[in-house]
Image 1: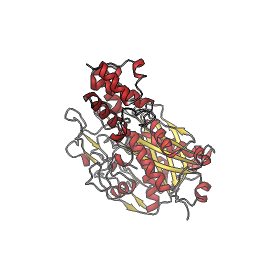
Image 2 (image 1 turned 135 degrees about the horizontal axis):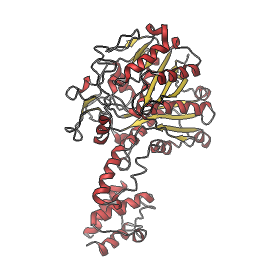
Image 3 (image 1 turned 90 degrees about the vertical axis):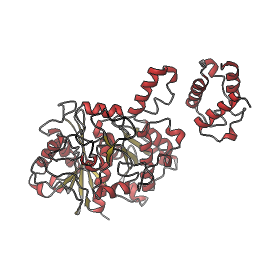
Length: 78
Length: 410
């Protein structure tokens, strides 16, 4: 597992208060991890803060699962 | 109830009757440059009996999203509903049960922190929970969501009269037929640098007792010099009388009177003639259909400011020849001033005074600043039968509310 994936999962666990084993690559923030639309906005902000990147709104809308976030950040995080 | 004297109503009431002060030096943020360095803060230390643990009432991940005033309201409402035995289970029960919880200021601390974030990091770093976690009516919003209360959902913002207005207005919603049950009260989490600085600038806070905080809140005393800020929440379950009887509810007391008035005088100072307070109490007694001589106990607004004697004068005018019969005390001498929560926690203390036949004391009243025939219950709680209690709340902006409670015959 990449360093980025570890850091993403840590943020998801902290922000959504979910068990680590539920935070798989395929886990959907809303359908599987109990997030609402405001939670997902806050998650994206936390990713921006952690990785020092800006995630534009249209890109944020495509980040629906843990794996989506990892993939986006692997490609865009410096 | 969550108060500076305990994380629940039993501990708070016991400590009040014992004449304990909830005041201490503030140690969780910088105060050395503030004129007032003391406050009445909720006990969070597990070694204190009846301490408050927010995790008992809301998950830590939810607490991060909201200011403390919302967590306090959730805690107080959970306690009140559990004590009442009422649960809104059917659709019909849900739509007939509502919430009316107010706050004087709301999420001041969160607004202060977000302003720093905005200045330091820019608008993209403002949390989506910033707004819903500060809005005053979200205290009631959270309570309604938790307990499925789908009736009237309302909030009051009338400074230090908020808690009393909330209970009074909620009782009217029931009397008017809008609901059978109302979860009502006030909540406040004002203890932060911004609010200590702001209230001190208004010359409202005590500043001479930073080294002896337990002496600072001293209503009616010659050496009083301002109020001590407090935090917490008071929430009650109000219920239509027949509805409560039908389900065999434990009834603490009946709300028989509620009066409101405005001073139309000054933004922070009460009218010196006390006319607003007098008209407010008179209206509450008229609504109750009783005379001033029927009132046994008055829970005063009594903040430990210059306004104490104005209220006292208004009460003397109200009770007239019955002045030597009525007992009045200020529980703010123990709790400090809980601002928007004050009227609600004091309504609860008034009701418990009726239940237990105990007048809570006015502590630190060493040298009364004026002579009066009214017994101010200095220093020690007083045992006496109380059939009727009146609770006063007066707020910045010249907003006044009085509630009257009566013992319910067995």
